[in-house]
Image 1 (cartoon, rainbow, N blue to C red):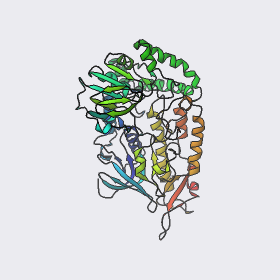
Image 2: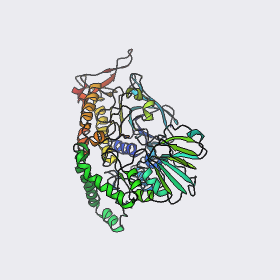
Image 3: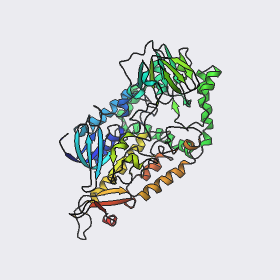
Image 4: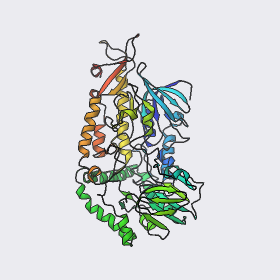
Length: 517
């Protein structure tokens, strides 16, 4: 990275969100941008999560960009290695390599109100940017709970997202802490290898069968030769999930029938009534993410697997003690305990116009206008921001909607920043800052809609909720609704900032700027 390099746009992260933003910028004719990536390769969460059995729980043809269809997905639900290879392919096909700045973790980014630029300090050097797209994603920084005595554990300890492939689990006594989407894939993968697996379960998940199969060569040839068949397959997968949304958002009682299917799925593999009782949730299905697996329950029924229906409380040497007093001697601890979702570490590194960090601004809970813009952080937007998550469909759909918003944001800056016209309109550098009232109004509407959803009424505590019990993660509607809401930037929701005259400091809001459009 050149010393004091300046770019028009800095994209942070090279997962689906960051690479998608890079592609969209190029398609909008913007080539003066960089993608800042803390690791040595692209891929985001699909690079970091390489644990045994890692795969997606969204069908392959829906978990890919609409502008980069892949006719050669090998399975209906793709594994981590295939998704990572797809992202590398996207990087090459769309010519993104020259824009990558690998091993360049963002350490600090600060808004300069005088120059209307972001000053960015990275592990690879310093630069500045007119506009920042934060695409670090909510599943990027692992969370390991503070367990008393963990530091003194003599064995191996790692998180599912930081898997130690040099450590051989064969013949080992392994503790799996957590029962989320990663854990239900890891347990079946390591159960045949380990001497014993002890699963520490605070809350049992609802698990439906995973209808995975190999996609035949004939199907793939058809998709290559007739691309509209790939689009049709994607459209069908999308439509089914759109029809399901009302049960999650407006009529959670309708999910009772789905619970019965999940219970039958469990009963087929778990014959022991006591174990079935441990594994049966006491909350409405959908309140936590519904998990998909056809191997999880059969693995738990094996004689070398023990289910402890209580969270890990403390560690005493090689002995793990659960909250209910159950003890287990283990050689290794694997944490499948999720990520910093509602307290993303990147927020501590972003300093806005008033000198506050994003974390300080979000102390009462994450809020962003249309899931993208935070008040007091001009020319900054986040991809997969507050209330953009999904409980039943593909996040790629939401990302692409936010890319539409990004594209229009850049267009608006272009229009507002043209040289002054005959009436003195426009002119020079410009920035857009979300109005606090607009952010509050948007989030009030979102939270009002959230009150009826299964995520708020289902009787569970999930990672969708922040420390205040507020659901700042999930979008309470269809992907179609979100796409409409993010189709374009409404300038009435933003202050337009321009540099003040020479000799003054800071920037001024241009209240009449909307007339320039």
